Length: 498
Image (cartoon, rainbow, N blue to C red):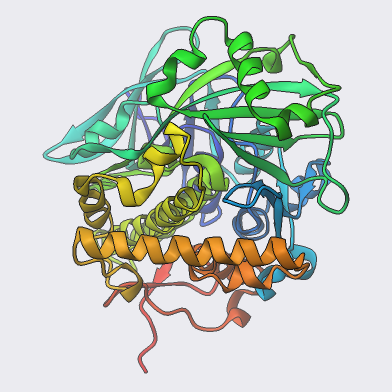
């Protein structure tokens, strides 16, 4: 493998988080030589602790990590509970309402990311990937417009060069490696918020069987997440608009406690709790939850996955899902090209089309979700309402989903987009009101809402294919002339002719 001056691999993955470790496992499973370069030493702290079933039972099943997750003892998450919308009563949805997530797959997990990420990285090692921690990538090797490797320094500060057929940027939202793909990073004016978060021992739990649910509670200055990581440990975070940055400045702990005082539901759940003050969970942290998307997701020899490509507001717990889902899509493209079955442009055009489509589904869902909250006295919520957004923001959304042939994304102008969001928001809000009013245990009204069923559709498709393989039936392309997954889910293939 070594030439004396450098090393050579088929794929170099920059970043060992969920996206990077998932891609590394899926490519190594096809017999390719994979190197993961991770700048930190695991286990390391990370936010993004609430998973979706498609990650647990779909993608982690494909990589072979699902058994280890089941044995880790993570809190089971059966759905979500929200104090959101015009109705003052909390409402709950359950994954089990969908036939595709019924039975043994009707749950996800609330995870301590230090443990979860370690499981996925160790799984990549078991599948044959080589992992080097404390290895910081410093640049890319490029020749005539094609990326062909990276340079990095190890823990001792020694420089190295690694050549590869493909470089995968899975370095997250703070890395600068994405710039080598070219294009620009556009930030959403609709979702530009700040998150302030910490950890508490002894917080209250929702009544069974929903005690493991994430609790999301809207209040005047924004919204809270309340994630039960264990029987006693809870992740608590407040999301406020960027214009309210003064609320999170100064003493972080005092700022968080002040925001908790503004939200009666969260304050009541923490009435007997104490904040963790030692170890990695002892810090109160601030993060910019600015949603963005890059104008390009790949170039010859290099691809962006997860937060390196795009990021969307975390209220629907989509972060790890988008990271691992994009890793699956990119792994299929890499495996197909390395096998010589699909040309590079076709394979990676498929990757980008599907990833942009999934991102846009969550983006549209979240706009509708924010729009349904009625609080005319709150500057946060009145500014978030999509009907009050400036036209360029809606145009930006239209550009985001441009080129997607599905009728679901045929938004011809800003006015039609605004009307579409109003209709979706009203439909979703009415479903929630019916759910609360009738105490509907089956959650049928909520899942009749088209915006919810659309957001769940792609994830459940991947989950079904992972569990059933060839028995899941034939896939159809998401774009005209596009590709479909192979029977084993690890590469692309041409769709069968009618």
